[in-house]
Length: 261
Image 1 (cartoon, rainbow, N blue to C red):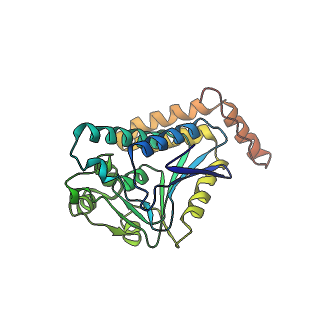
Image 2 (tube, helix red, strand yellow):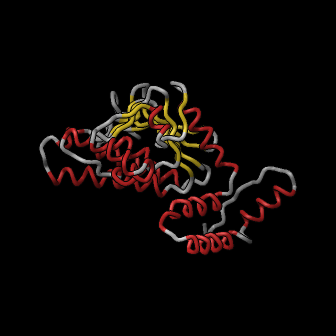
Image 3 (cartoon, one colour):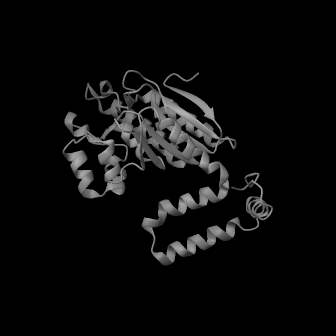
């Protein structure tokens, strides 16, 4: 029985709602529950995408519960960091597509969770930031890299070093989020984006996602070689044959993932 989140299904998408009112803060137990839930969904072939959002109208997540750091206990802090690492790794490793539906404030570790999703959709009233330095800490779940990768070093410095909390409009302007929606619609739009994945081949999605994410680390020649290898690994598989047959037969494909994918 989930204590810190709720789980629902809509089409081939699973919706995980962080639910620790009033600000949906992230505790060690809550993060481990999130990691376990996403890992379970990753093993379910009927789920092709995950939407992550927050309960209520005001907060996606305000980040880590600062009570966990109040005593200055390094051992306790390490447990929190390990839990964040497990949760974010589960999101990164999820074989389908992940979409963050930001329905309010996404701060600190909350924004770091959203940053590792494939897409980020935010409502007009949302606010985003990594204000850890205001309490003598720094982003410790990859935020100094994932934010810089998304918006560039200068904006990452402005947000992290200056503790600036930005609006959804500014986040869209600098490329932090992919879409702005009206209040109350982030989950609906996110599910729509997520369910688009259901029309694509599961193995093809996994291969393409891996190539896209690793492209900054490769030369063009290296990338072309990996792309060629990945394409040939798909050719002849049941998924590829079904996809082509469906296209030629003018019908929707019936995806059954190959056993070795």
